[in-house]
Image (cartoon, rainbow, N blue to C red; front, side, top):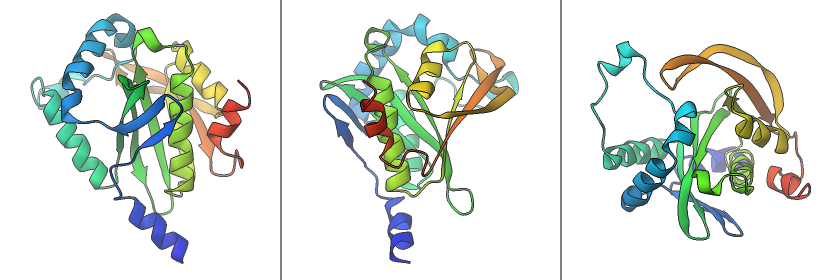
Length: 209
């Protein structure tokens, strides 16, 4: 009973900071605006094929050109409500991307999904797998989640390698699952369950490096 109570309380225990070596996950904040815009601009062509978009019907009712500040405020409110974990991704003290846990559900599901992006200049350095592994360990060990998803476009080879490096299990194809880069796109769902890696996801990944 005490463990269940602790895990319920920690859902609202935002902000959360996780770190391994030079790689750090910490809350996205208002003063990240300039760095965020610079990184997104520099990496625009590299990120665009994987960026979430809104279908026309939804875009008509969406906020027009929401500011970075508005995005941070919404993310913070969602984090405090226990529905998301909006982390900024740092490497050696510099902002290089984001790792966001969304769809956090407790009850009989106890699951969530993880999304991420990184500056093109820092891709391929093991930063994303390490960050996602830290997030997985937090979700399992601190929040007591049972199921974690990565939903990846079949064409996104870099993200597919992240799932494979962290020993996620391929569950199957979800046709037209998410609206990405202007169209409904197929995604492959990879899953990690509580207990799949008893020694920890980060420890398992680092042991292979």
